[in-house]
Figure 1 (cartoon, rainbow, N blue to C red):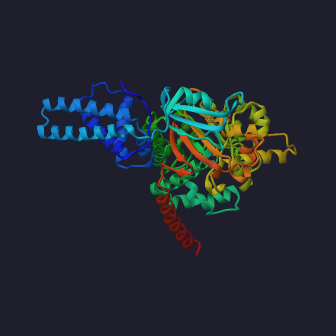
Figure 2: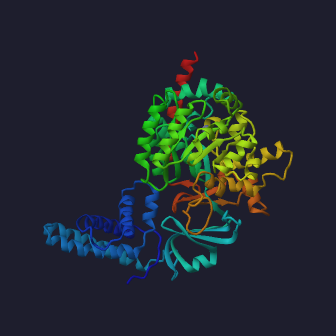
Figure 3: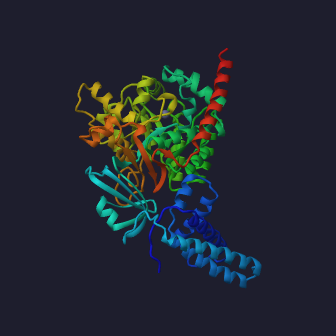
Length: 567
Ligand SMILES: [Zn+2]
């Protein structure tokens, strides 16, 4: 019926689209059973939001709407208004509405001659095509497609191939050019405490327990509230998106606030309800935090496909065996994974031996803690027997080299765990012990640390570490079937890295560069679930100016209060 083509934004189309959406909304309210499918409703709703200027992403979506759909929508809506006038709508209102719709249609039609058409093929119409000089798929056989493209529709990767093949087969609402760019899966940050960006640099150069007990825990009780968590998480999401991280596993307080920020900024996350047996910013005890955690998980489970609510028991030195078991039972009851700090420091090793008569992982195994999916952060001090337990029980391990080095927790036996078949991912930990959320730096340090520790440059080659931050990391957190590699059917979480900076010249081996050269400023474009979160280094889903202002204001208060306390 309509010649489907795409075109770039023009004001007439914006107006037409707006009218169409308003009419569609009217129509939807009155005639729910009309033949509008779910996708059509989504597009119409998007137009209304775009007009309201709620955020740039939505506006961007709106601006690239399909003109024929807008036209069809107006015709459809005009007929509906005619019907509605039969059912009590005043004649004046319906005439007015029809007149406006007519104007909108005219605006739409006059732009038919416009030459703002960005692409025109006879192929299937889809949402997005991302192209690149190399598509590093991170699939099981490590396919790299030279001069390639990824076709994305409805948040899913529907095809990969050479740029020529894909652009011939599909016509996209939006095509992201790939000159001097490398496309790869979005990075997976397997362990973070996002809102701790606001405590970045507040206490450095201290041992873990001194740092936790004398600085971090007291500072958190004093300063951390819902507002702190919102601003801190927004700051973290901004930093992570900027650096090409698309998924993170978070452990902090006020899970609802964290989940709301993730919802708005478009990232993918596992958000923990933290369980700890001490007064924390959002609970009084282990029992209280488990109860509140259950409620949080019930609120968020199945609500947003990008957000997985989980339990985050802190560690076996802040919870006793019964409390750890109770957390696991609650997690099994609700069908969610657990993220926890495991075998992080010599302190924990000794504490576990003294308290439980066993090292940490043996102790967790003895109480049935690994009976459900577990993401174990750090794992610096596992014994060979414990590594076998981790492999058998399919515990996902998250390596945090910067934090382990900075707090001098030790060097995790990553290569031994990988050799034993343990799924190992990579994480930044919180910005208070890192002090940033840069996974490129984390990858580089992970490689270098193992090499120098074993005095063997052949261990932890670039591809192994890149896998830990993509497909391997996704598997470690239990999401390997959905994300972590660019394969047909997986969620469209992918990034474009610009290779035009001097430090990428020349490029002999893309994988080598991604590991040993690339840094977060090279990331140009970030897409999660098919939605563009950053385009040509501009963040589209967060108000970075507002975040900067709020973070600085809050930091000034924290600083003043700390100065007062230390006087
Ligand atoms: Zn941590």
